[in-house]
Image 1 (cartoon, helix red, strand yellow):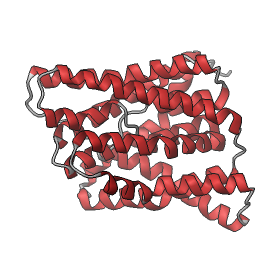
Image 2 (tube, one colour):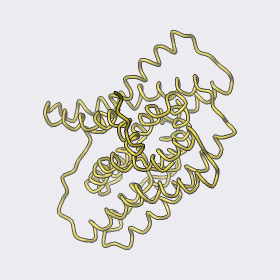
Image 3 (cartoon, one colour):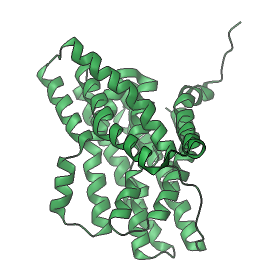
Image 4 (tube, helix red, strand yellow):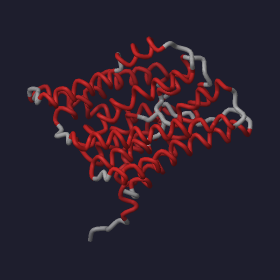
Amino acid sequence: MSLTLPPALAPALALLPDFALILLGGGLRRVLQLGDHFWTGVEKLVYFVLFPALLFSGLVKARIDWSAAGPLLAVTMGAMAAGMVLGHGARLFRISPMSFASQYQCAFRFNSYIGLAVAGKLFGMPGIAAMAIVVGVMVPPANLVSVWMLARHGEASVWRELARNPLIIATVAGTAANVAGFQPPEVLLQFLGRLGEAAIALGLLAVGAGLRTANTKVGAGATAAAVYLLSVKLVAMPLAALGLIRWFELSGVYAGVALVYAALPTASSAYILAQRMGGDGARVAWLISVGTLLGMLSLPLWLTML
């Protein structure tokens, strides 16, 4: 006799293996005590090799409905814009200007690793291809606004960094190959496929290994600002995306990918940026970690609303 599950539980159960990998990564870091050097190496491998291979192969093999890609990007841009605007509300709380500049990016930046894993799990290769397009288009403005708010580097260095971003390079190359009708040899596709399979597991383990939930002693203003920014990222952005999805009448894979994107927790790269630019890295790390854990609960709930 088969067990029929309530519809509301279906997304949560579908995403459970991916979320379990995140928790496993956190457990492995503490139990095996592999150290920062090991996990930094894993993150570099995923960022520079495995995820670019996943993006490129997904875009090359997928049949992309370019007529629907425009509304998809309009929805994701609108959701990000909502996060950027609402994120300024954190200024109302009693936190220093540099702490605000550091934490502001947590209102709209997104974790590409989790996004690609969830899109692939729910929608297969078409979902990965759609999320790859979103990642390639949304990463530059997210990085530009974050760096500008921290106000430490000039625009030239920002553009140079974006031009070297392996995720953007892979997205541009994969999109160009798709449009041109280029079909890589089967051997190359299998090679890229193997790398892509490793990308999901190692990427999620690295996300879990980076979780930092130990909170430092802060005032009521800092706590209120953190709650506000988490609400913007995990509640306001998905709400904005849901409204835009219905406005543009998106459906199917593109609707699901747009909502997944908006509901994603903040990327760990926000912590790296804050640290490099002399910001409040400790608070950003805490926000990312708590947001990731809360996102495991909120993301499946949002998917039930499509």
